[in-house]
Amino acid sequence: MTIVKPLRFLAITAALALSAAHGAYAQGDAQSGVKLFPQCAACHTLEPGRNLTGPSLANLFGRKAGTVSSFLRYSDALKRSSVVWDEKTLDGWLKDPDKFIPGNDMTFPGIKDDTARRDLIAYLKAADTTPGMQLLGPRMPNLRKAKPETIVKMIRHCGDTYFVTTGDGKTEKIWEFNLRFKSDTSDTGPNPGKPVLLGVGMRGDRAAVVFSSPSEFRTFIQQRCE
Image 1 (cartoon, rainbow, N blue to C red):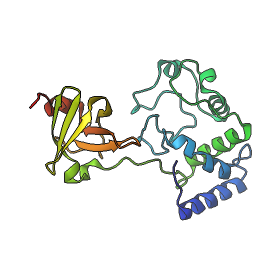
Image 2 (cartoon, helix red, strand yellow):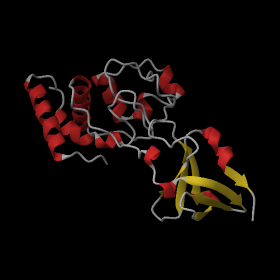
Image 3 (cartoon, rainbow, N blue to C red):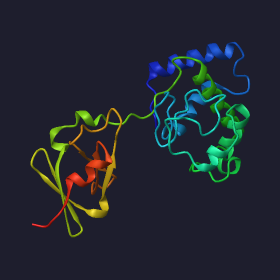
């Protein structure tokens, strides 16, 4: 869940109150809607061009569904739809995404409370038109500044085990099913040739190796036993 710092929250609340005073959000309470946005922030940002699991919601109103050019993971159903986002279409989508556009890939059951939907839509519209009102989504770690002890030097596979050697000379032994290989081509992804080992999960027995591009996978993974 996104945590809103007190001063930032007060600034957003003041901007919302000013907008409401002009009657811009009569159909919903944007001040309440800002508290609901963390439900969306796990998969979406309000920052132009910054996509997560889902596309950026910046400049949402008046945009045809499935048309953010930098987002490549739209379902065919969404791209084929003729939906243009406004208060009415967003209300239908947020109430029941699967019913509104059957066959889409959004794994979200919907918001059944009418007031909550109106409030969230009011906030999204305010964030669309009022500078400084966009809550920041979760930030990925800057792997270009990874500590030497997390930078991978070699990966060896034998039997059902990966042996991952890092910059401090230590070798982690990880069951093959518990090690994930990922790539991060963004500005905060690893430096080329310096993949990073990250711990994931709650038990401490799972890990991920993040590469700067998929082309590095074969370079680092060696199939051999000693």
